[in-house]
Length: 349
Image 1 (cartoon, rainbow, N blue to C red):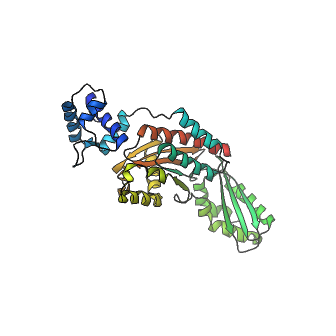
Image 2 (cartoon, one colour):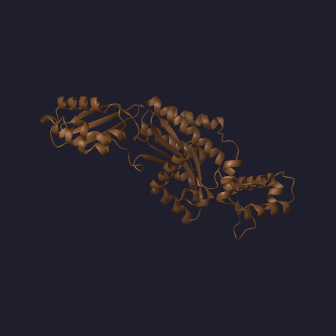
C-alpha cells in the first residue's frame, strides 16, 4: 500500500465525501458535509480542505458542479485506510447459508447458485470460476464404457473434486480392454500432478501398445492435453447479476448500458484480471479500482476477488461494479462466500 500523509481532518472529509457519493452518485458539496455530518467545521473550512484534497489527487469535480467526487486515488486510500471493517449482517449470512445448504450437490449448480447469491447480496455483477487443476494431484482414473464407441473418463483429484470427459472412438470397445487400460493408468499416473502427467504422459504408457489396446492408448495420448488441463476460463466460469447491476444509476444511459453488456459477453477480461490480481496479492483477496485493472474496458469499474480452495485446486470468487460501490459490504460478501463455497464443495465429495 502506498503511504499518503493526510491530516485527521482531511481523512474525515475524504471519508464523508466518499460515503455520501456512494449513497447518492451525486457530487458532494462542502455545505452538505457541514449540515449532514457533525464535523465541527464551517462550510468554508470544509471547502478549503476539499480543495486541498483535489489538488493532491484524491478528489475531482465535474465541470457542471461545485461538488466533488472521489478519484481512483481517493477510493484506494479509502479502501486501504478509511473504510469500516468488512462485515455482513446475521440475516445476510443466514441467507447465504440456507441457499447453499439446499443445493443438490452438483458442482455446476453450486457455482451457479453461489454467483447468484453474491450478486443478490451486493447488487453487483458476480463471477465464480471453476477450480484450476494445474497443480492438483490425481488420485485415480476410471474409464466407463457408455456404448460400443463411446467412453467416459472420470478423474478423481486428491482434493475430492471430480472431472469427467466423454470421447468417441472409431473402434468397438471391449470392457476387458478398458479395465486393462484403467489399471495401467492408475499404476503409472496416480499421485502425479496434472502438470507432471501432461509433460510425461506418452513416455509413461507408450510401452503398453498391445494390439487390442492400441486404439484406446492412441486416443489417450492424442487427448492428454485436453484431459489433464484446466477448462478454458470462459467455458468454466459463471457470471450472474446483469439485472442487479443495471439498477445502478451509472447504467441509465445507453452507452453505459451497452458497455456492461459487452463486458458480460467478454467475460475473459474479468477472469483474466481476477487471476492476475489474485496472483499478486499475498492475502488472497484483492480490491482493484479503475485504472489499476490495466484494461481500458474496466476503467470505470472496481473488482473485488478472493480465491477459494479445495485441496490443491483453486478457484476464484469476485464481484465487479461501479467504483461507487459499498466496499466494506462487497469485501465481506466475497470473503464469506469464498469460505462457504470451499466448505460446500468439500462436502459434496
